[in-house]
Amino acid sequence: MTLSDGSKRPDVWDVLIVGGGPAGASAALYAARSKLMTLVVDKGIASGALGMAQRISNYPGVNEELPGEELIGRMREQARAVGARFEQDKVIAVSLDGNGDTKRVRGTRGAYEARSLILATGALGRSHTVPGEERLLGRGVSYCATCDGFFFTDRDVVVAGNSEEAAEEALFLTRYAAHVFLLSPTPELRVPDVLQRRVRENPAIELRSEHRLLEVVGDNDVAAVRVAAPEGEMEQPVAGVFIYAQGNRPVTDYLTGQLETTDSGCLSVDEFFQTNIPGVFAAGDVLCKHFKQIVIASAEGAMAAMAAERFLSGRETLRPDWAK
Ligand SMILES: Cc1cc2nc3c(=O)[nH]c(=O)nc-3n(C[C@H](O)[C@H](O)[C@H](O)COP(=O)(O)OP(=O)(O)OC[C@H]3O[C@@H](n4cnc5c(N)ncnc54)[C@H](O)[C@@H]3O)c2cc1C
Image 1 (cartoon, rainbow, N blue to C red):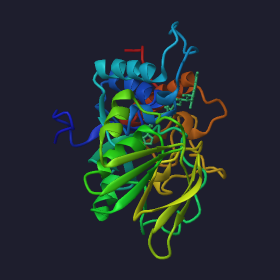
Image 2 (image 1 turned 45 degrees about the vertical axis):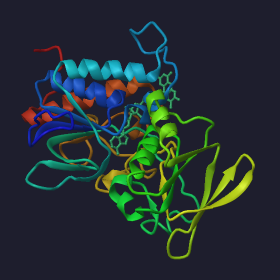
Image 3 (image 1 turned 120 degrees about the horizontal axis):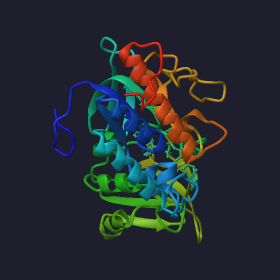
């Protein structure tokens, strides 16, 4: 089988890491240095908390002030240099008790299988929905253009959000939809310049800045959206609404309740960052620790990778990275 860059890939990875922020990239560095076949599946470098941070000046050993995107780029380069592979894809489902003792992961672009998983998807998940969203989910409301875009062939749709994911999904939807209204709650999209340009130059996309989604309107199917705009509230007739808003809840939707959580919905892990399913680990902001910092997410990613290595080798003890 091949990855999107055309390179060959194994059928079963030793370690598959979902999320390539500081937790995922550090886990990849440690896992790959232990000679484990390591794949990171990440939906986009600018979609995570570090990717969207403007300036970082408190990461130990990095004296200069860096955009978050550059710091995470450096972390990924370091992991790549020792053999870790990165694939851009959004994970939408996992199967944790599947075939034998492997775990299966499904993205919008491919399917993956691994002997151990590290979940590092951060905490930019949404905490609330807008009126009409849940009622009309699957009846015009969607969170996945690759999955549902086809159903809106020659129809008008709205994409709500200002992230890299929202911009990419809006571009993807132009393959099908007649017209895509991209509603950004902020004056500018929070995406790299090159993506910003692709959005602005696409004649099928109408970018509406400072437009916030208030309600999804419709009886049996989506008929329109109600929006707060600088000039006041307005209604836009559309057949589909793709929502990519961000909040500050742990991103665990793709797990569909397969793992134990605390009362507040955070993944439960033991002292080795292992969840209630053996071989499935979690690290970084997705654990909703009080201190959301790069250095802490990175450290947890490293620990989760060492614990995954211990799990795969069947040893009782952890082996530090330098004890070769
Ligand atoms: C604006 C801002 C400024 C900050 N400034 C600082 C600072 O100065 N110093 C500091 O120490 N900390 C700072 N932080 C906090 C720090 O960025 C986070 O604590 C840290 O990035 C958490 O790392 P993580 O790897 O757990 O999650 P993230 O960095 O959020 O990475 C999660 C990754 O998972 C990916 N992902 C999510 N869902 C999926 C999916 N379904 N499929 C595939 N991939 C997925 C995302 O694309 C992302 O790359 C800041 C945060 C923000 C938002």
